Length: 539
Image 1 (cartoon, helix red, strand yellow):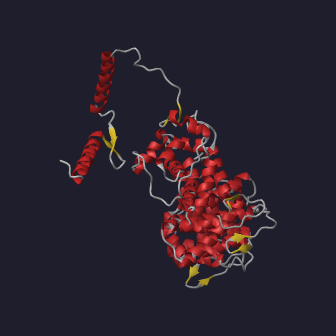
Image 2 (tube, rainbow, N blue to C red):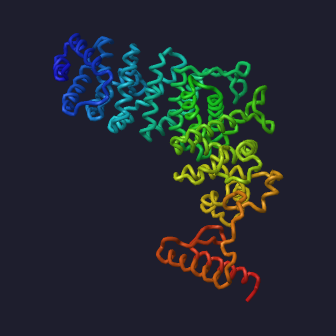
Image 3 (cartoon, rainbow, N blue to C red):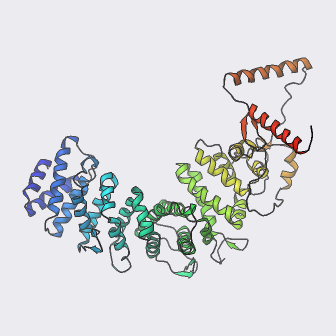
């Protein structure tokens, strides 16, 4: 059907005729996601007419058809102006049942109208900065949260709940002011935690342990999984700075309660492997936002038959996180987005919980036996992580190195032992530990975990490569002293030329363990030696 015909019919305003024409248009364009530029002005005009038409007293079936047409038009980001107005958004939010004015929410009884309106709002808010600004001014987030609070009392279909949560996610992702309003004024963390608990349908065994039937955890149904993931995304948006600030006892209890729910999310599967992976990914992202002291809930559940026990602690959740990490490593896709959240989470958990660190150390860095291959060669988890230490992406490289460094109790010698000095150099340079030493941290005393194979091979291990190297022939064998001196001077001259032409810059290690240009390093060492002599009273 010609667009101008549709526009003319809508302009005429006769309800039954408009309904028939829009039904045909919707059927033709239901799968249309690209639009002809030549008809752009016609589509804008149609959008204006539809918003005005929707403001009339219409039958629910006509409202739904009209909203379906608006949803189709809202896919075109160049035709959003008529929708991204105060009047347009107020009309759509009223039909969605979330129009907020003071303490009143007008209830729209027809659920299909609510659903189509929410879909339209999601499209418009996602693509229009002006609409995002107006929804913040119109306090749509207040109307949304009021309805979400009623989920336990009202029987709403899955689709309405899902698009409520999707719209809330978009608003909190795109507007900092809405994010802050939900988190603080509307107590969003508590509200969304309760909504997650309701969606998961959990029962509590202890304050921070979810009850299971004889240890069995059935998969989460598809619809509940979809809603749970939207809730996790909203919670991620409003808690992204929680790990960086101190929280009081009340907030800590709330975050521990949320952490216990997230542990349950890790322990259950969804409908299919891909959906489970996505569900766990959102869970891991949110766990990384929780205050560090609240992560102890991952270890809280008692050890029961079938649990993975280590040092008397239930390590089921930590083991699942480790398996999740290895799957992401093997997949090798979008490493920064997929790996850094779980690596950071495991690193910080290991830093603050001794049992977690020891368990991860036993799994990732078991006592060394293979000293013939480089640390980055092989298929063990250690090999895979060491390979990441020289990755092109700085964030990935740093996260992998930091994780292994913490497992080594931030000891330079142990870190070099497991990774090789060449792989470790980046982190050591950044930390000012090139000369060795140890970062300050609360770790237990060192224990001797060297295997007999390692002790035997240790004198022959090349610390740079981290393995026993084959003995190479001496290139200076058979040379006279004059020839050796000539080759040495030739090498010096080559380095001097490269340095003067700024191809390379000779570096040295300062007394503080940092890398610095050679002349600066030598001067710092001389100054320190002079200072030491003065302290001893030497001339």
